[in-house]
Length: 253
Image (cartoon, rainbow, N blue to C red; front, side, top):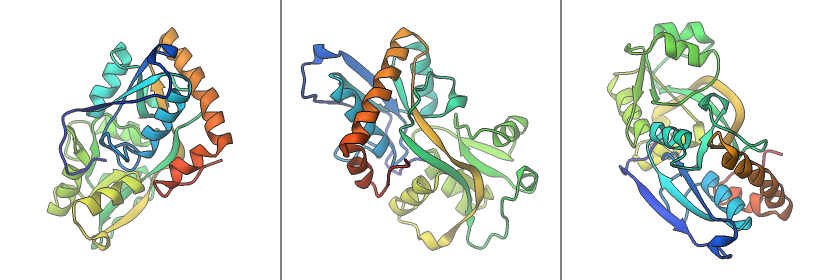
């Protein structure tokens, strides 16, 4: 789920069109998961741009940090950060009603591989790479827990776990990698690899909502309510479609 340029932490404060005292500051973070979240800059990712627009329109100043995913979740849980961009229900944070994007997860293998994911039992014959702290719902999460600490489920950490996993796949150290297609193909391209060397080998998690998750407190509840209200306005105004269009995506509604 990561890109080749390693980054311990990148922070940017987006300028708002209203004084910062109007809504205060919102501290958000994500891991490097392009094209959904990436390094701060002109194209920080579709999820990041949506979250930025939502809160700036409500009068907040947004601070966005790029961090390893396990740290993002931990910092939001303890309140050091207000929100994590890119969570699901299994991450244990407070989520609004409106998702920030919809994503699915696939298994990927080398072109020469004959293995295909046909259900949880089909995983018993292979080993696969994943990122620390990522969840996919059942039955994948239970399978990962069952084989935790073994070679069958190899979890990569740090700032670029997908890069690590793709390299392990190419070296034969894992048989498959689990990832969102947009992120996998984006990373393959940025690593300078040929797309034709890999194939999708089956859906691990069908299309499902991805959220901005907030701290489990009153402030988190307020920010979730703001997100829902402003997301509706963003969609109504057409700005949501424009943001998604910058990344070759379309609205799911």
